[in-house]
Image (cartoon, rainbow, N blue to C red; front, side, top):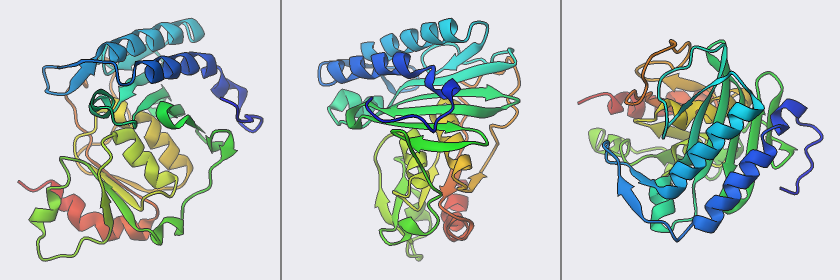
Length: 268
């Protein structure tokens, strides 16, 4: 990374070398990895496994004694006062298919909520950092709340499981230009960066949303948890199969405008 990070708290920069190493390995492996299906039908590659092991070991060295919940490792909520939620390679389907769009997602939790988040996008060489109560940055430059800036383009993010809401409301015009990019964490954070006006995710797991959640919060983007909230996760709970359906929007007015489609998501 070549950006200037003077405005970012030093605590947020302790992860720089670790994430740089994982991002570089992923860029080198891109286009050369065979994939296999996991029990839930999602894909995994050797690079996913290497990235997970490297991040978990690195966090243990940098933050000894703090637990880790990760997509490819332990899925139990740690009992430590502070712990990490990690998705070593969000967007494996894209990665395995040769589509250059995926992310590394890490978030440190205290008191049941994320307090530090890092989202790295290796193919774009972008890194988004958020610190609770301090702000959010992209490649070292402070991010501002999107407000109405994204309204002109009006792009709206859906996922392969939430796009079905269009059929449930056939008589209503969907108020956005639909985008399906295949990376839950980046779909959500695209709202915070003003790239989309909303994101509707049907089945995100805690590792998909942990870092994006804090970025959205710091940039004043409202969230509506549609079934359950990830706040105050209980130590020892297994979240390997727990979904947290969510609607994120650039402002409160937009959130309400898209709520009919979010509500339709919950209907059988």
